[in-house]
Amino acid sequence: MDIPDELLAPAVAAARRALDELDASEVPAKLRRVAVSSARRLPAPLLRSLLQELDGSEWLRSRTLEHLEAGDDPPSRASQLFLERPAGWEGQMAGLCEEILARQERRSEERYRAEITRLQEELAETTEALRRAREEMRTRVAEVEEAARRATEDRLRRSRRRVDELAGEVSRLRAELARSEEERARLEEELMASDRQMVGLRERLRRRHRRGDDEPAGYGWSRTDPFELARDLDRLVASLEVGVVGRGVHAESPKVSALPGGVRPDEAAAIEWVRRWAGPLVLLVDGHNVAFEMADGSPDEGIRRKLEAYLRRLWRTAEGPLRVVLFYDSSHAPDVVTTPGVEIRYVPDADDALVEAVEGAAVPTVVVSSDREVRERTEAAGAITLWATALTEWIGA
Image (tube, rainbow, N blue to C red; front, top):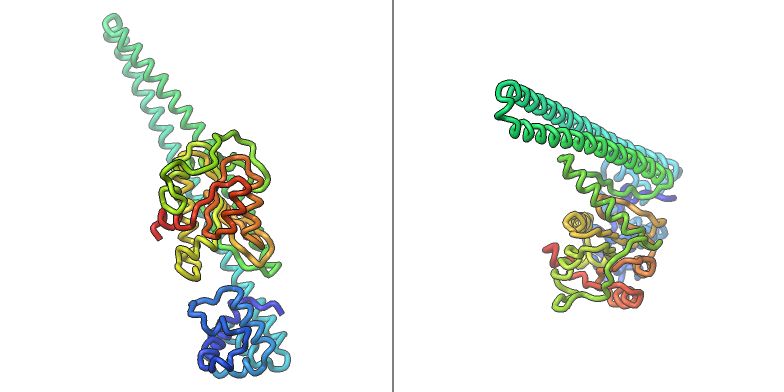
């Protein structure tokens, strides 16, 4: 039975306490790494090993039950059923799984509804601001035209030059009003596109729930200033024109095959060079490798979010069209999550995916990883390689 890890969290905690009390000789061979792990949350491979051993060992389940804390919430009930396994426990467990999945789906739908409402409110605020600006422009035009009329009537012969200047001001203001109208229309189209993207992401999330996959973290545009949002959207379009990593690109770019003299691949100056590169550039990041460097051990969700946030900052401040792709190893089917400025790819083997992405790129490509084999393979494919320490020093982790 496929039981979500969330429901078995109390059983996992109890099992770890039980393993702590065992002598080293009593710990099953498959669980020795689990027993010595000090991580607050077990990495996915160790968690799977522990759950498989619990599933197959009645002795270990019995020892774990002695350390299970009683509770009436779904995870506590599910853990009790999983360890005791009374008659008909599978049916009760299936009910709890359906309950927790339904609760997750409701929370996800509420988050996406709130995000859609926020985008609609931003669109309404932008439309109202543009309407006020248009009215102000019209008022200013009317005032200038009235001043020109009075000047013509009162001092026609002495004020011809002044009238010409005012007429030029009127033309400029009308052109500015026309540009404002065009900008409003463009912003409306882009915000509508963002809304459609949000609907698509929600549908993907529902399909993932039906398959039983884990829910990916959601992302959205955080900018509230419409002009800042417009600049980010322009930058996103420019980075997308760099091409789809792994499928080739269609952009001319200055040739570069190595870092400039004096720039070391393990220092923050190398990332500054990436940020200041004026032409199209693809930055490929070995996600788990860099996250381990930042955390000095097993990274948690907060470390990964920090890494993604600083990569978005690098994308926003880049002087040229920069495409940023972050690769993570995943035991699930390959998936791609697109956030503002950063494309996150979950792949079965990040090392092979990085090499394939370099081979498919037609613009300068930079790979960030402290894995020597990854650097050697991607360099052979034509990439410029940087150490993870270059990125962590730039971040200040």
